[in-house]
Length: 263
Ligand SMILES: [Zn+2]
Image (tube, rainbow, N blue to C red):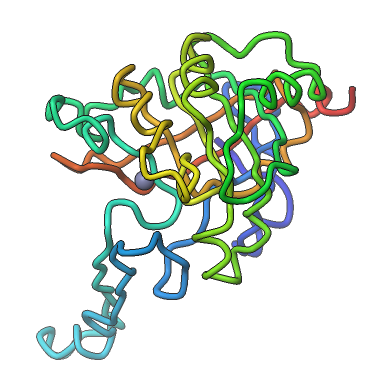
């Protein structure tokens, strides 16, 4: 994979890029939030801690006389549900300790994507099946990609810098919508919110549906509304193999052929 453009020269971060992969030119958009002690976390979950575990200067103390300038190491402690993360089936199904995050199959890391906009649904209410169908009509999506990924945008993403609003003011999929989406054969459901469930509904209909149907989902996804086509793009979503993990931070990219985004 080669990186084109000014990024390669300056090594500065941009959330969009053009890449060449197996001879094909693709546009790539980062759908991942950052990890830092300052990010909002789900109420009750552990915040991120990061510290200078070893500075360049400290590492040199054990080296004696050498021109090497030393190495730096950071310490890191976090919850498996911090920042952009994929929930394991075991997270919401106590009967399936075999389906912790380390069991997520590689083929589900690289899938076809479709995204819908449900950002007019009021916070702390349900996203109904009727609303999902309307969002699909508006996006020109006839069917969800079997074996693929559905992304839905609630609009709470724009409140990232207001932690209290970000972690409490968003809608969630109801049971009927959740089951219908899984009936279409998707293998992952992604949202910009901290949860796929309406925070005012303690029955957790979406988590329950995914627990019964043994399907993962992914939360705190960034930039969904910046994917320039509603279907016909690829989603790359990669969890760490945390043995026994109830979730894992993931890195996610949407990729598409540049010509396909203009139609
Ligand atoms: Zn989660």
